[in-house]
Length: 243
Image (tube, rainbow, N blue to C red; front, side, top):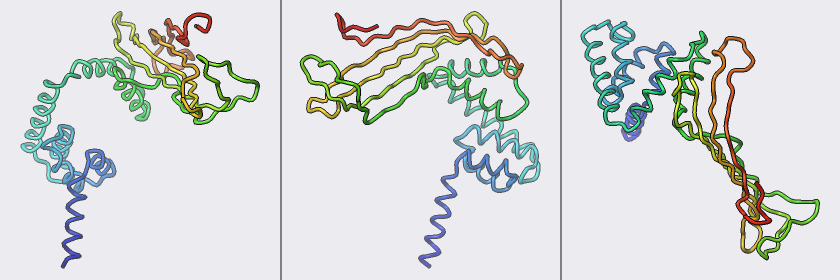
């Protein structure tokens, strides 16, 4: 009896934790009855699930076609989306992302379409610019580093770089252009000394505009050109300044 109750509990738990992605995988695999049950569980709070549920009722996938139920869930999906968007601070951002995606010439293959959609959705989000890395141990073999503020500099140190980019505006002049700012910092950290100071840090802020020069899939080699300004400095000032 205890084993049956445990099995029932686990089954219900797994059933309750179904996600939209899992439900969509079932649908795309042709498991329409399972997908229907999954979307039914999610539809009240998930407008995408409500839309899929409506479509399945409309097409009779996993159930008998039912126009009344289809219309009901289409309305639920629309109302939920509207309420979520109306109160979202990202409403205007999402609108611009959709406009940018719709402006692309759509290729036929699904993988490229997905890539374009992900690219459009990445706008107005922080993303990697140059390489981001950490090198826990680097060692200089060819001589010694100069001392820093009276501190003796060891040959072994930690090196890391952080680089991010933010696209803050698009299509102001209707060329499909993207306006971006970026910041890169590369630091050399004397992590293996008692004071663990930074031997040097290089700072590189940038501003640039990327302008597409051709459509996706048109065969041209150069897809876009970029114009920008940047400044790199170690921020030390005086004779030690490097920029």
